[in-house]
Length: 395
Image (cartoon, rainbow, N blue to C red; front, top):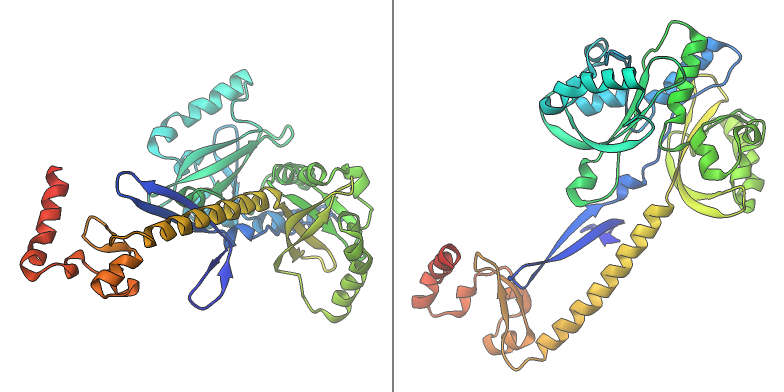
């Protein structure tokens, strides 16, 4: 955990390394706040196929990651709002164009051939997997991303979720990442519903849709994978089956209060909480809730934070160990009989020990950030930077 100037704190990932031959320690800090962000979307399981279509499309448009649906000719059939946000094109600019428009030229040139080989041979090199690739925005800039591809049913369409890895690559670690929303698939609503359900089953996080009585109406495959129940066991059960007992016993009342007052304490927000699996074990997760177009239907995305928490704990432990080592080394240096100075290539003081302060009269705070020539007679101090420059050039 790190602390800002205003006193607020935030979770972060710290990576330390020693600058070879310099005696300096380099630290990269990545803010993990956004990685706590969860996913939310809208979906509805209504007898009316048209209402179901609207609910599911709403869920896709609320997803955290970019979504593309293409046909066997690599032509884009659907994108969501996140795709537009990430890549810079409008939905109208995407639809009807080859999906290689989001690829760097060296990849785009071969993509249609890859698809043709898959259609002809049925050999699935990418299908059903996730792979790190490079994508290209409208402005020509590229970024690393995670691509997950699936083939919903026998629709002849292919669904790809793209998660921007820029922040993770900038300092190594997580997403955020964000999902996508859909626009249109086929003219037949029943076929559309099947395709969209296939897309939801390809999502990275667990999905639940409940009614105003807290009864589960829909889940995706990830929900079953994360919690251990089958879809048949989920549907028709109260959503409190995935909650610890002390939360489950109060949940129906929370929903009742929301329906009576309209006060949205959780709707439209993301919150970290504890969930419970079928085997009784619990795990930390982030929950994002939204209300579908049909009143009383609530959609929730759940992201398992177990690995994030473990990684965070490991980082904190490592940081504590490094701090102890640093304090020990500093104590040894401060006990030295001689003054110690550590400077960078610009001759700026990065570290001094207590003996330096005693010998020269400045405090550590006054030393740090100053040029080392402050401790030299003027005749030497004015040429010292030149000596350093020559050393760095010639060795």
